[in-house]
Length: 167
Image (tube, rainbow, N blue to C red; front, side, top):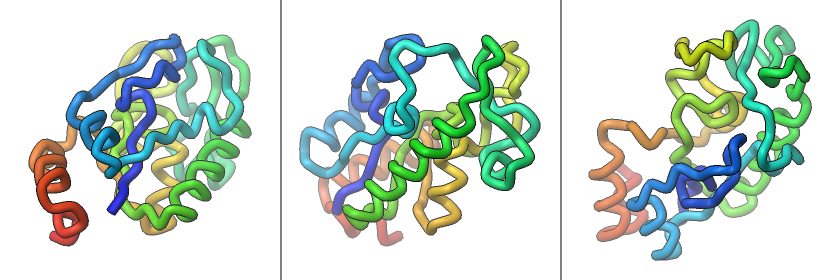
């Protein structure tokens, strides 16, 4: 059983500011061959580094509905890149029969439950990112690195593989 993880959580320097957010337990899953990294923003052709972006006018599902946009702090509309990257990431997951992903919290692509408000002031609002909305619509289970049961899941995956996901 293979899951996908945000590339930045695997230690890849793909974030908007050129950094990563290494989460060592997820890197251990990758090293064990049980996780593959994915970054929808990179798959959408966005460079590293890049201007920070947030969803304005809603959340990820609203971006897909055409009622919200993803804009950079410089005002540039990057909605199409975010959508293209999410579609490419979904294709990547489906080709590998991946049904579970652990993504970066609060991200305009990968956030689940909370995302940045769109005001570029550091505040959060309820909602999901563009990729998360697409993944969930397509039956993929999305967790973020702050999920309260994540440590237990990682431990079970490392010990038992696929059976850990069948709870």
